[in-house]
Length: 239
Image 1 (cartoon, rainbow, N blue to C red):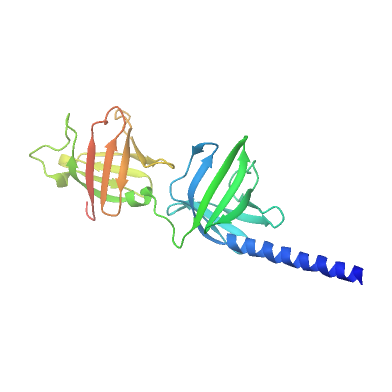
Image 2: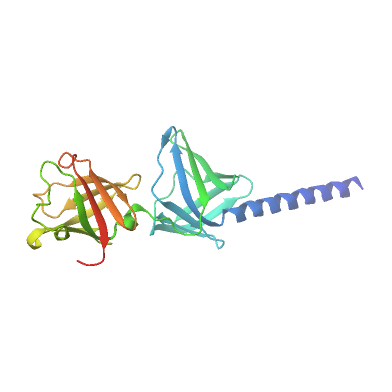
């Protein structure tokens, strides 16, 4: 009788543990945005970082509207460790993350090179929009605060000066008399810092802090050549 009762208790605990593990695994599934990444005492939160964890054991992740990884994932019910394997990326030498949930957030924790890594994610319905997503399009200059050498001559029309930011990471500056400057643009993955890299080697690269939305773009110079410059653009739909 005692042996039968013991077997029943063990079976009951196994069922409870299995169901709890399954429930935890189900909570992982969905679209999540990274709210913060803290490594040791330093915050290193990427811009508009997201991951989509699917019920079929696959995942995708990216920044803004750009997907930059995909692969498979596993969850260990006993250790509560989530492990993702990128199909095209490097092997993650630090292994998986210990997972917990609090106040609707999912928390990932692990150690990297002796430092604690803490990632906080929140569930979302749609992909987040990154500054790079807003940037793509045609922008017309409406104000230029360069006191040293403004690009706007009082006799010129503001409509002469446009900035075309293309999805393929090429930019085109349109100036007076059909003059154009082309090159590549790059945006920092952790802060709203935009860098223009001209094709013309005689023109120095310049970096700007940007404030952008669906209608307006403000760029503030942070390079030696543009530190006193703030330019404001509006979005237009014609060249």
